[in-house]
Amino acid sequence: MIRFDRSYQGLAVGVATLAGFVDAIGFVESGGFFVSFMTGNSTRLAVGAAEWQHAALIAGGIIAIFVAGVVVGSLVAARFRGVRAAAVLGLVALLLAVAAALRLGDAEWPAIACLAFAMGTVNAAIEGQDGAVVGVTYMTGTLVQMGQKIANALRGEGDRRWLHHLGLWAGLVGGAIVGAGILLWSPAFAYGLAILLAAALALRASMIARH
Image 1: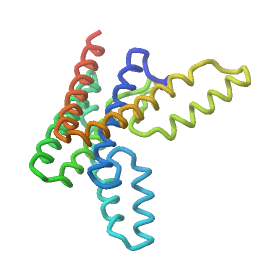
Image 2: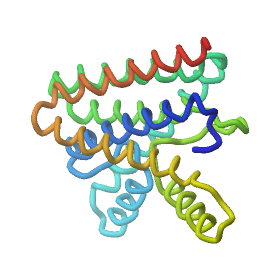
Image 3: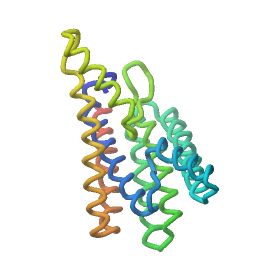
Image 4: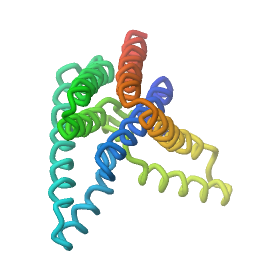
């Protein structure tokens, strides 16, 4: 988180919130598979393979689709380097719209596949100060860095930078809570809100790039 330019820190939290929101939708709709958290799907693949269950094929398919999304997102980011965040997030909004259309047409699994592709794509949106692309759809590394910085602070060797990591994690968890709650109330509204959030983030990224 601290590798982001200051202007992108809020955007990163927004993207994490979107990822949590969409991941909750995918998790509920698929009956326990993730569309942004591939560590969880990897475990499901391994356990399913060990038990000879078809869940392994589902998890493996989602992982492959997610990776394909990362590839496409990275290509778009390279093509539109000056406005990479806006371009990638705009594409994500479009993919979420396609997923919503599929869901409304009762094509649930194609919709889930499109959600996974979108979440792979969104990982190319934010670039750190060192030029590295920073993934904001998974939190294990973020929590590890937060713990390390808390330890440094307790030894008197650090500052409060761990709060940045806490904000990123809180964004994802908050988004997931809201996403799951709204989905249980109205799937159509949940998908629509995800599209609007992605579009708003794309607009915000465009404004940051202009300034």
